[in-house]
Each structure stands twice: as C-alpha cells, then as structure tokens.
Length: 183
Image 1 (cartoon, rainbow, N blue to C red):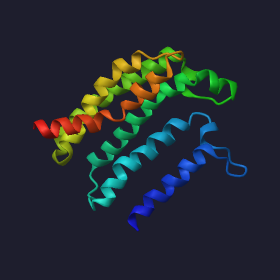
Image 2: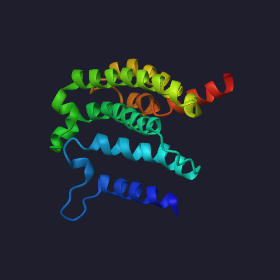
Image 3: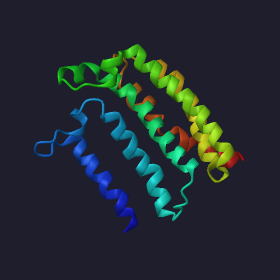
Image 4: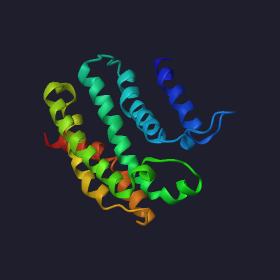
C-alpha cells in the first residue's frame, strides 16, 4: 500500500505529461515546467520508491539533499533534449529553457550544474556513509557527463542523444556496480 503512495502520483504525472486534461494542457506544453517534472518523477521512481520499499524511511537532511541532487542530475541531463528539440518546440510554440537561454548558455548551464553536483555528491559522501558508494557514483557520473554535454548541438545525430546522452542516466548504476566490486 505504501508503494501506491508514490506510484499513483508518478503514473498520473507521467500520463498528464503528454495528455491534456480537459481545460488543463499537457505538462509538456506548460512553459519551463517540463524539466522539473521529469527530474522529480525520475527521482521519486529511482530514489524515493526504493527507499520506501526497503522500509528505510530514515529521513535525514543528507537524504533530502541527495533526493534534490538526483532531481537536479536528471534535470541537467534533460537540458540537451531541449536543445535537440529547439526547432520543433519553436514550431509548436512550446517555451523551453534552451529557447530562452540559447544553445550555448544552456550547454554551459548543464555542464556547470554537473560540476556543482559532483562537488555536492562528493561532500555528501563524507556525511552519509550508508550511501557512500551511491553518492560517489553520482559524483563520478556528473564529471563524465560534462564533456558529453559540451559536445551537443541541435543538429547532432539522433543516436548521440538516444545512445550517448540518455546513457548519462545509466552512469551512476554502472559506476556503482564497478565500485562495489572493486571496493
């Protein structure tokens, strides 16, 4: 039953992301909100839900910071897709961060954000020993994401976005597997 407390809102938000609800437009078409909705639903799915399932409802300040950090990790990873879709979103009159800031500033925001997150994750790893390898995985992943983000442009091939940029979400898991085997 506890799981439904998170799954139902995630399912509803995911549905509303693409479908208009009577007089309320789909989330994707609401200016500037798309990135935050993706970040929050992803974090709830990958951090909040497992925490609830494992009955680890221990809520410390560092867990809250970790949740927010993972949310921003996903948001920063999503910015390149706003850059990729800039022409399409302009045609549909959907206002996005990439349109507002431009390609160069959007890339810089994402890369700088990943650098800041890397430092944040590194600092958290000293205070929350129970999640140290997870946090270190995100710190390393954030650093690895920077050159990939800086290499994007709106005309990059689709496989770069679908294969390379989307794989940024897998980096923490893969690095966690590696670190847990090595250490």
